[in-house]
Image 1 (tube, rainbow, N blue to C red):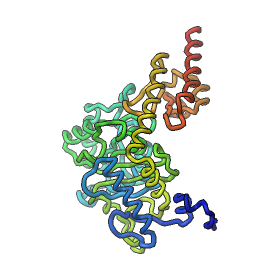
Image 2: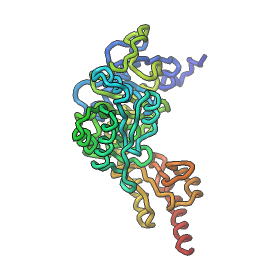
Image 3: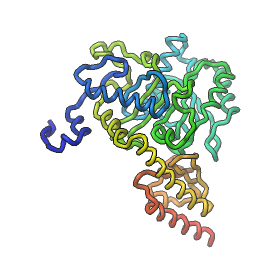
Length: 372
């Protein structure tokens, strides 16, 4: 159906892979997959190793696959842990609960709905977006009193709205204090390709024994084609998501999505290879410097905002802006009906020259407000 003889395709691996259309059904880190596509499967396996070890500091072996996005990867983790508790602990489904912060991505309640699980949110402080140990413990004890014995915990490595980072140690200490069983999944859909490079010390990776799985999302910071999330987990877990009825699939299927394009794995692998570790680190430093500049300008105007340390997201309180300014610059509201916050994400194209007009408009708004 597609033009396969275009000469430029020889120098366009992603486009040519789309045309060859390899099906990456299954999980290739388990050793057996559809043999017709072993070339691009090898690239996906190498990508999983790079992400789990070079970026997330893992030791030993890991499983994972290129998913359709962060939402699916988070659902994969919750599905896997639900089945783990059902099979290994003989849990009743009503004894299992998903636990996340109030700032967690909507994929958690979506997974709860699809997988027929309860979910409970831990409140966060309005100003610093952090969970407290007291709140964590109170929520866990309350859930325990309601008959919950098994907790699937989602820790955020930079939330989508605020770029905030959860203190996973507070969460696990509260879980241990309450004497409940749990598994920890890190949602690094936004921060997975940023936070490990911007923060020297982090426990939201596989160097932390408490973390069993991680979501990355290459179509965010890495700017891969949409439909490119990554699910990673420690060995010995992904078999709980095996669909045994997929016996016609060589190697069987362990994923939510089933059939998926191998071109996405090629795209992410090529992006990482093109930058290299030093090139990507330098890019992150540039974005941090630009974010510092924006925050300095907002500070000078006494504008109230939130910025997580070493983050490239700046979220401004809505009462500090006009709707016209927010719309003009494409600032993203936390709620389109009644926004309390507007965020700006500092990406490659968001240069200081592009941010200066925003600052000028905010300055004029401040002057106008003072005159009134």
